[in-house]
Image (cartoon, rainbow, N blue to C red; front, side, top):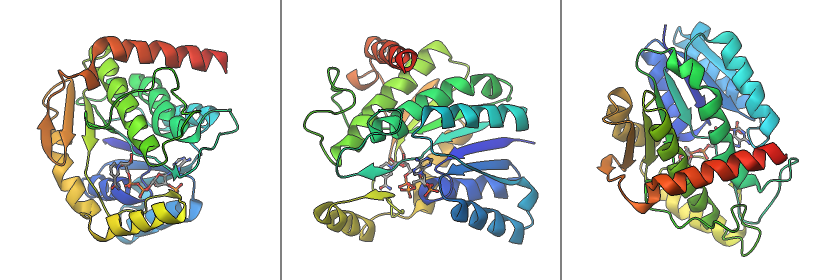
Length: 271
Ligand SMILES: NC(=O)c1ccc[n+]([C@@H]2O[C@H](COP(=O)([O-])OP(=O)(O)OC[C@H]3O[C@@H](n4cnc5c(N)ncnc54)[C@H](OP(=O)(O)O)[C@@H]3O)[C@@H](O)[C@H]2O)c1
């Protein structure tokens, strides 16, 4: 039986994707920090007769050790991973650091995705037609601050999300180049009415409320990406609101992707 692992699967687009895969008969493991949301996911699955296939792991994926715990958990409990969705995010208007001493947005939105996509490769390779979905910038969100990847100077508020999106574009580009047997999808869904998990200053909170009021639904966002998940057209595919966008652009530059990979491995080695 196929398995989908969905970080951020307890809410928003991730939760909508989890419902789709449960309906298709997959085992679905959702990951988030809030056990109540995990219990709600499992209870709803139970009501639809899919309780035995709905799984939840509480983990704070902004911490490096928690990503390794998730990788170990999946490796122990799931023989293969057919779909890996990297959708956890939590945005703060002001800069914060994790217990690892890393900028929190960088740690959750980018570093976690680096760790999970690499750490779960052996399980993805066991699937007949694996795919990884990473919510990134899809080429929209550059440039990368190479001299300040953790945004120590002039923290850009909401722009920190975009910066991580650009890092995720390069992560997917590097994975697609080095492991083309595991297709990578980068998706920018546009504005979607989700929980917008985070801690916002009043101005940003008002902006988020406005965005939410005028956004598409998570189900609409899922409908736009599902055809690509079902049949990834290339080792690297970038999708913006349902439309494929070019990947032969600076946002996916192989040399920049390798540079980021090397910098990330050096950072992890130094922790
Ligand atoms: N919504 C939009 O308009 C929009 C636009 C562009 C891109 N995207 C991207 O789409 C993806 C999904 O976004 P969304 O808006 O659907 O998400 P969301 O509703 O804000 O939900 C965020 C998810 O991340 C989980 N999460 C938060 N902190 C976590 C942590 N430290 N460790 C593990 N999980 C954590 C939350 O679970 P808990 O609450 O249980 O912790 C929740 O399931 C994200 O990558 C986002 O950047 C969204």
